[in-house]
Image (cartoon, rainbow, N blue to C red; front, side, top):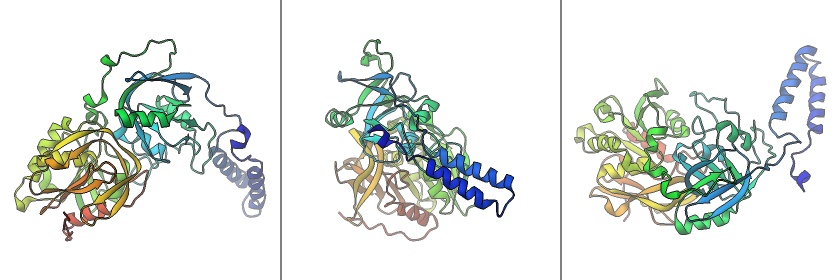
Length: 433
């Protein structure tokens, strides 16, 4: 059975390369043809694991604060870590998930059973904006990874290494062979749990009364940029973006729609500089939004400015929570959060339902919103808030991720809606009760 699961043997590929090399000599010098064949061969060979790749054998334990202990195989960095254990239901996209800054401080359990079979792309490749082309930040932000079945063999046109090798490279542990279905049910019943991955099998069980809860840490301050950075220099629409842990694809989506995006830290005094910009963007980010007191204070000034100074505002994920708090509402911690690529949300404007990517543990309390603010979207599963909107000013935000990466792009039109506001193109804001 193991052999059946291995990648297709390369003999046919090698033969094809040799054949192409032979035909190439009719058009180019022999040395150039040989170099070309060698380059192509190296690229093809890099897209799948070697036939002698071995499965992980070292053992590791997962301790949960409810007393549960699970034993599995260590396939990442063989180091012990602590964090908040959460689950995500996405069936693909682990490179994007692991590099999403919103997962800072968390140990991720993937509900999809087989993980690693398509490897990991080349980390060194950059896009036209100088960002890692296939990732959502420049590093893995999750503290650890939990899976049921780790595929130590991989095969994909874009792969450069195995998932396990990438985890080792980044110093992040992973455990396979776990009953992730049971783990998911436990988290759904009890809420997100503190946990510890322990590689020393003789170590005593951790004292969870002394363990630091990541949500009590200012995670946003850890993951945000430290100095203002500009993307899309020279573009006609000037937008200032408050970085609370912004995913790279948000930058791409805004810049390709004509925004010159000035990305600033979470505690930047942006209210004083709004006259320089055409719009304001609030990013996603990890942890408790109430810790971003400076951001909320700045945002309160912007949303209450005189009518002749109003600029469009758009927020995503934590940006939605910050908007709600600045408006005078409240944010609450959800029992186990909404994480994955298949979360249904209902649009209060049109009554349409969208399938959305999500990653959050906090949400706005819709009942706490003051007059002139209304819910824009609602989660069709748990009825939690998925977005808010001001009834007569161009302020709106969403709890899900329209930029995807990974996940469906059903709601990418919201970027156009925001840019439309910024360009002073009328955007209908009629709400249904």
